[in-house]
Each structure stands twice: as C-alpha cells, then as structure tokens.
Length: 328
Length: 199
Image (tube, rainbow over all chains, first blue to last red; front, side, top):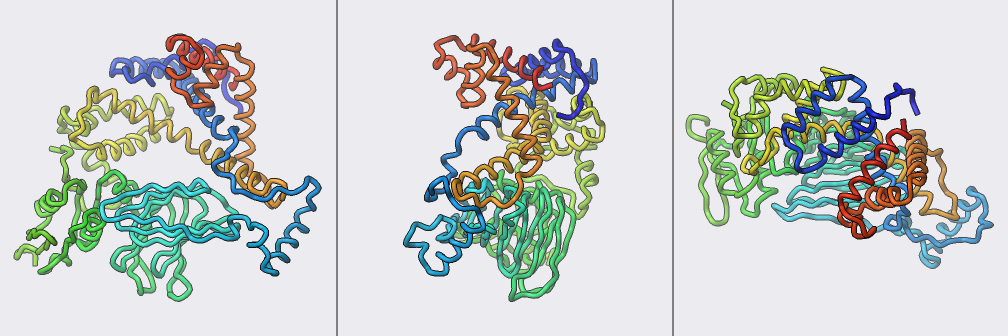
C-alpha cells in the first residue's frame, strides 16, 4: 500500500460511526451538518472517512471477485492435465480449424459466434450487459448487433446507445454505424445514428472514429467532453466541446439541446413515440436550445412549441410542426 | 427566477463547461420549494462541505457542478421529504463514485482477466501479463479477506454474510438467529477492525 498518515484508532472508529449513521435512511440535515463540522475539525478526519468508505467498498467487491463466476464461464472441453504448452495447442487448433473439424468436436463459443441482436421499439429503452462486462443503454427505435471473437469485440448500431465499455486493451471494441466505425478500448460515450446523421459524444476516456473501408475521411480521436457530428457521405465532421452528461440525459428521460437542428430534436422524439412527428414550412431550418422531459407526446410537443417559434397540428396518425410566419 | 420545470430554457451556444454551468448557478434568486432552488441557495455550504471532505476547493467546485447536473435531472414532481439531506447524500454519492472509479476499473480488469483464464482453463491460452492495477487490487482484496477471516467468529460471519454474500441486515439476522441490532453492532465493530487493519 502507499504511504498514508497514521490515524488514531479512535478517529477511525468515529469515521465508521459517521459512515453508518449517514447511510441510514433516517439521516437528516442535522446529521449532515454535524458531520460537516466533524470533517472541519481536523483534515485527518476526511482521510479516515475515505478509508472507512473504501474498506466497505472493497468488502462489497470481494463478493464479486472471489466468488466463482459461473455465470460468465463459457463451456470449454477440459483436457488432461498433461496438456501441451500453448504454442503447440494453438497449432493444433489452427490445424483443426483448417480441416474444418471444429464443429464436430465442440468448438468454443467464440469460434462459432453468431451475432446477437438487441432491438427496441419507439419509446422502449433497454440496458444490455455483455459478457465482457460492458454495459449498453439502448435508446428507443434502435438496433444493436453484437459479435465477440477472441481478438475483438464487434458491434453494429442503428439508432442511439450509450456504451460503457469494459477495458480490455487486447480486445478492442468496435461499433460500426453507417459509414463510420468507432474504436475504443474502455470508456463511456454515446453513439447516435438517425436520418443519415451520425454523432459520438465521449463522457470518459478516448474514442477513435474512422471511416469504414468504403467511405472517405480522416480518423479522429475524441477525448472526454467532446462530440463529433458527421453527415453520412461527407468526408469530415465537426468536433465541439460539450457537457457529455447532457447528451447522455436521454437515459433519464431528458433531452437537452444547445443550438441543435430542429431535425435532430424531432428524430430524438420519434425514437420515443410511435406517432411520427414531421417538420414542414421551414421548421426544419430552425435551431433549438432547451430541456425536454419525455413523458406524454402531446405534452412534449406543446412544450416544444412554447419554447420554439413553431406551431403544431396534431392528428391521430401524425404531428406536423410548422415554423411560425415570423421565423420563416 | 430559475425553477426546474418540465421545459427549462438552456442558454444557447456557450459550450464552455464553466460558462454554461455558472449561468444558472450564479443566479441569486432561488426557490426553496424545489430541489434546484435549494441547491442554488445552499451551493456555498455544499461547496464548503465538499472541500472539507475532498481537501481541495477546486475539486469541490467540480463536484458542485456535477451535482448541479444531477439536481437538474431530478424529476421536479417527485416529492422529497428532506431535500437538504438529499443534496448532501447526492453529493456524497458523487464523491464515492470518484473514490470508486479507479478501484472499480481495476476490479473489472481483474474480473475479466480471471474470466479469460477460467474460460480456457486447461488450455492455457492467456498471452498477456496480468495488469498491474489488477494485481494491486487483488492483493488488497486478499488482505481484506484474510483480515475478515481473523475477526471473532460471530462478527466475522455477520460481516461475510452481509458484505460478501450480499444479504440484507434483516436476512443476515435471520440466517444467524440474532436480532437486527445485534447484526448492526457486529458490522460496525467489523468495519472498525478492518479499516484499522487496512491502514
């Protein structure tokens, strides 16, 4: 462990008492204020408190790390303990694969992998945990195809998803979406492809975006807090710095925009509701800034119309948004 | 006047994080009835509290911004019984996330490494060294596990059932045939002994 200041046992004990007291649902403002003054009494108190919190945290982690992970174990034929060393073993696999014998002897799952498809209807959201521990929040009207192999993790996305990718430097994670491919090692970011427009917003880590083989353009590296907007077919895109949490806000039912094309707003709403919204009479060229809470479609449209110079015509089968004459 | 409503205007076209967040936060007017209003009024107190905990004013300011984003995301129609306690709790959870970040990544790498090794048990196809962070995390967890083994039997059992096996305090009490308050006492004593031991 790294060197840390010695802390009296009594201070550690008090820190644990505070932790347990504040974890209780009954803890009120007075408890927090008293805790605040305890913290302020001595800088070591905060250090002691962090130690207590991390010990509790490690204890939870022990359950996960040391318990056998049966759920994750991929069936694999066990061999005699006298198994040959690894290069030979690989050579044998190579020969078997070349001879097309794998299927016959029970190939490991990663050899026989068929893509797994996850899809959502408009308004439906789904969280998927992949077997590498990566977590994907799939927005409405989206489709994700996943295929893992030994050297790489490959996915294809239409629609929008937030990826929280488990780190594995030896197995990069790829997302193909339209004419762009995203490559990551381990990070959190949003990928969106709707109506020919593609964007990547990075919340943590670094993401690399490259054109697919059939498309042109530069390979870009995006770091946390940056967003790439790209129109399919174009050679390049536009990188801006953003508050990534806002782009990821759809997971909490909140759509947050800063000077966004009205077309993007409508595409996002169409991922949330079955009844399509269309733009007419110059509404497509408007830009929008604001926060929309996604609840009832009529309500959302009403609020959108109160924030932007548009009016709506609602029918049973669709909603048409028109720019107000003054905004055309 | 700032209030979280279903549709709140965001200042357009200012992308710098600081300028965006300081806009609404520097507004002196606040409405104590809403969580955001309370946040705006109590922000200086919260920053002081974060600074005491994080030992850094800059980190405390960052955290206050993160908290702002969380507060904005709370559905304003949700009734909150003790909003100030909720703000403290949300801030504390963000600090815990921060503390966890590094360790969780290490633990996940470790889990993945083990996963791969388990996959191909007997086949020995692992071709990379175990990441250093994962080794450190593993050693620390092993030390904690050993320290937990050394606790007095009843205390150790309560601790393992609750923390390692993930039983609730009530389930732990049932499993051991003791009262919930006895479980609480065991857990408190165990956490004190282990935090001391982990130094």
